[in-house]
Length: 241
Image 1 (cartoon, rainbow, N blue to C red):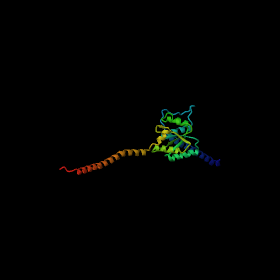
Image 2 (image 1 turned 60 degrees about the vertical axis):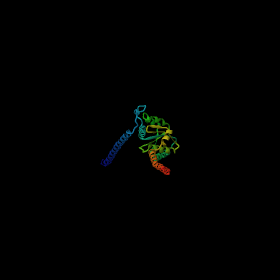
Image 3 (image 1 turned 135 degrees about the vertical axis):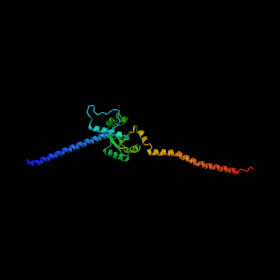
């Protein structure tokens, strides 16, 4: 009996350590999930009605669907612009390549494959509800996780990157509260950048001042010429006395 005591104590010690580790991991996971939920709740779209939380069978949605709903909601709420595309037979390697190209060439842009029905549910009763019609079939969207100094330039760079992939077709975009179709989007991204507009405005302001300066500089020259001609004319007249 005495020989079995060390083994029993060792098993009890292992069991207590295992229970302590499980409790520690569980509490850490709960704390992490609370932090994530608090972060996500601060980045949501404004809605005129609360989103559905139960299925038609009065059961909570699956954890995967809840996660996707929160992710879509957060991306649409915080991104300065969103570009909607359709993809056709895009392989996993091509998706990875396109994601890397957008991240490097378009100021950290991200590509996310979308579940159309889920996106439509996210956009329902929001200011982006009209955009839900663009999500049909194999869809994806490009967004930005962080603020970019020039969103217009970022959209232009993303469009140039997407045009090099024939399996991706741009169907529309949203900038602020404005929904853009393909024609409007092309015209929009071709607008001058903020720096170019500032340079044009500065040139328009400076041009009248420069023109006025040139005119004022020419006035004394003309006056001198007129006076010289008058002096020459008077000296050429015969003396009446």
